Amino acid sequence: MSMPVDIIVENKLIKEKRDIHVYHQSTRSAHIISRSSSITLPLETAVEEDYLYISVVRGPGNLWKESVIDLPSWADFEFSLEGKAVITHSGNRTLLKVPPGPPTWQLKMMRPNESSIIQTSDHIIIGENDKGPGVKE
Image (cartoon, rainbow, N blue to C red; front, side):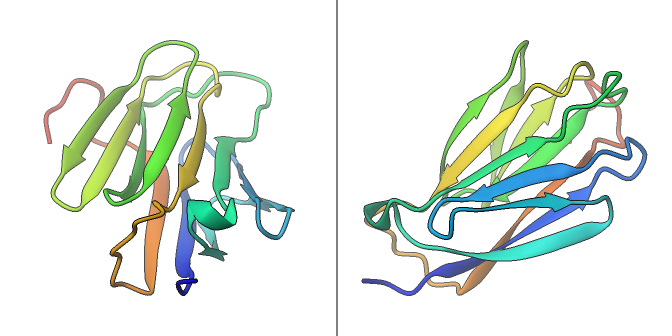
């Protein structure tokens, strides 16, 4: 059994003022993260059937700016969205770009079984794309 990797989930939806919902499978705990806040959770491998389930808390109105979900490139994940999204892999990060609209995306992140991850912590950042839709990185 390997050591868990501490995952810091950061809510940087400052202008959108939305909370983030995080469910942690191994502890069966649910957390709501307010804007400008974060939470650290230990992620075991998929062998231990552990995962994080992350989504924007639904509420009245749409998200008005393109959102960006920045996660480690070593992570396995399932991403669903009613609409379309852009997935970009850059170096050691994966970027999921979500267009403005209803807050309907859901992310399930897992740590691979054959993980050769050497770090003891990593992070996921959910925020707005201040460069605007269609602007290249």
